[in-house]
Length: 114
Image: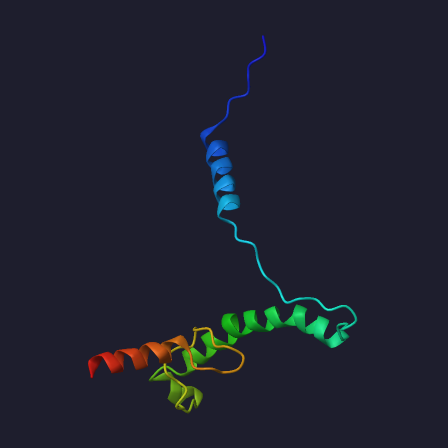
């Protein structure tokens, strides 16, 4: 006599999670592609290398900067503080160096205190 395969709780939970994720998915919009515009080879390379650079900045450079800018370590490493050093080393900053969310929140707090 053959036994019927039993659905385990793990498989049931995984199936429900997949259904939930598919149900909550939102279609993505992208820039409109124009035929004939062509992509220069350097732009294609930039599409591949940009995420690598961002990962290196957030995974390597910002933690190093955070360590060398600590109050007692800055003397050892020769770090000179600048106006931009406001403690938001791990915050996302747009490529156009527009004000960060932390600056906006700071302005909102100052306005609320007045």
